[in-house]
Length: 118
Figure: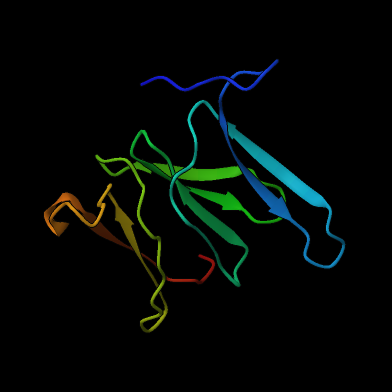
């Protein structure tokens, strides 16, 4: 895979977090490739995003610190959605599924957390 580099720079991807009240950037996570998934943030202070290498990441919403990552086996170019069920459930969809491709190219994982401190 190759990308055209912008003048004076190297092509890359980034995930930025902005403070909606001040309009100031809080943090940035840099990546070698563009981030092609949507981003989900939660009331509990988590930010989820996927990448072209097949990883889904969870970040701390305040600091941008990576909390964990999981390889879903396919580029994460689809929507990331959350559906509360009881405590906390997060269906994570990964795959590249342009409208011309069948949905079988998508993967869905359900990651559940109790939402309670142990």
